[in-house]
Length: 159
Image (cartoon, rainbow, N blue to C red):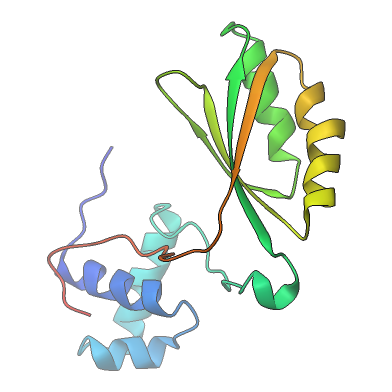
């Protein structure tokens, strides 16, 4: 069921998307509300699963994770065991940042971040190519990232 947000919820979410570490007092001041109301709203948004987590976004290059790859995976079959098995295995591979199930010529799109090509080669050879049902793996290396955001556009509230 879709959670019904009002303008105050949206304003809070817009502020938290810009800075998840923003103190409740600062949020309350920016939305012209009390700290207690603001805190309860944030708690409710967390309890409802709207706010999944609060994280620090790192600069990959500054921590030596210099290569981002987008990997398309095509499976041999689409049975009840093959796809869930693939998904469960890749959830445990920390270099895989995202996994999307697709419609079309390929079954999955993975976003992989590694320090160098050797790390990707090891990941490919020892993990990805060994998963039952994998037919084809095609990877593309990102030369640079021109836009990266985690902010979802929410209408109805100004931050």
